[in-house]
Structure formats: C-alpha cells, structure tokens
Length: 103
Image (cartoon, rainbow, N blue to C red; front, top):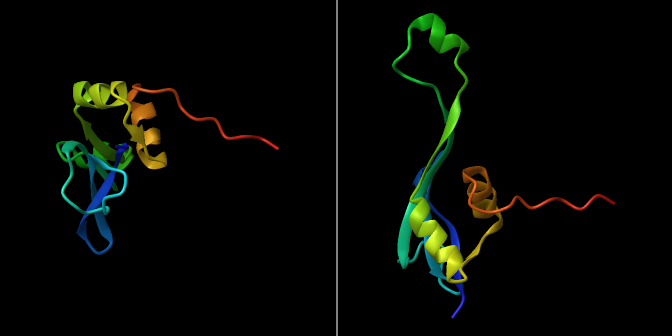
C-alpha cells in the first residue's frame, strides 16, 4: 500500500486553490483522501491591512497553511510526496530540497 502526499485542485477556472492531501497512490486526484494536512493558494495575495502607500510597495505572497506535525507523521511512516508537494515541504523546512542535475 503506497501512500502519497499530493495536491488536490479546488477553486474556479483561473483561480486555483489546492488542498495538500494524503491518499493512496492509485486513487484519482480528486477522490476522497485519507487526510487533508494543509492548503496552498498559488495566486499571489497582497496584504490587506496596510495604508495605500505601504500596499503599493508590499510584496505579494502565496499562502501555504500546513499542519506540520501531521506532515512529519506521514513522512515518518513512509508517505512519498509528489514533486510539487516536495517543493512546498522543503520551503516549510520539513525535508531537504531536491537539487537539479547539471549536465
């Protein structure tokens, strides 16, 4: 039984929103997961509680919400993250980033 940590897409057309889920490797992308451990919003958001001048200079960010303890648990029992989830988990500091091979 291979368990994977991957993204499941939600949201409207041109407004993607992803749940970070744990599911069986052979199940469909949007089927019922074993557990939802976080969310990822790839559309850059600007902070809303700033003045006009601060808002113009503020950097947009992509929102990632992750239950770190559950992610550590699933990685500990052998769940394999997908490439995109690997990148998100490495940004959160849970796993080492993959290095691209240089030829």
